[in-house]
Amino acid sequence: MKKLAVFIFICFVFCTLNLLGQTKTDEDGVKECLQNYMSGTGDRVEKAFHASATMKYVDYKTGEFKDVPIAEFIGRIKSNPNAGKSDRKIEIVSMNLEGNAAQAKIKIEAGNVIMNDYMNLLKINGEWKIVSKIFSRADK
Image (cartoon, rainbow, N blue to C red; front, side, top):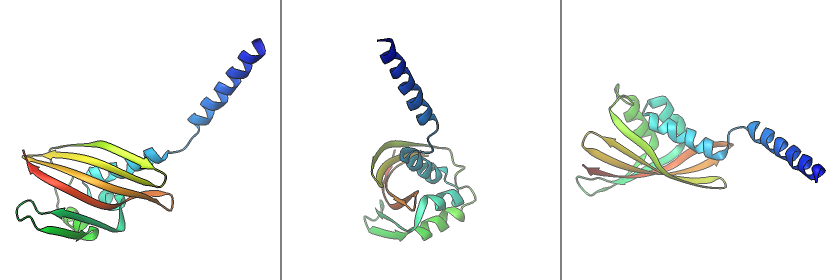
């Protein structure tokens, strides 16, 4: 019985040490990518997206479908000197991860607007990137 207890203890110690020595998990990588996006600053937002990513939405004023290359979206952020500095509440509402694909919902409240961003991410060459973004906008 004592040998079994020692064996279990040794297994516990090795498992704990293995977990402590692990590098970033995929969940951590997805969260890091989303945090880059959520920063609102040009260089970090750019880092979050794959170069060929797209942004699609329905214009809340006109009802027109829009399909925007991500470079255009990033350009708008980089040209805004107040990007990332606004008084806003932003949070990851949900996140699903399976293999090398992930999906996340981000809620942003700023002023009188609520935005819900839906991000699709892929792990490309070992790094998580947003490959597509759709969103909805509503007034409070």
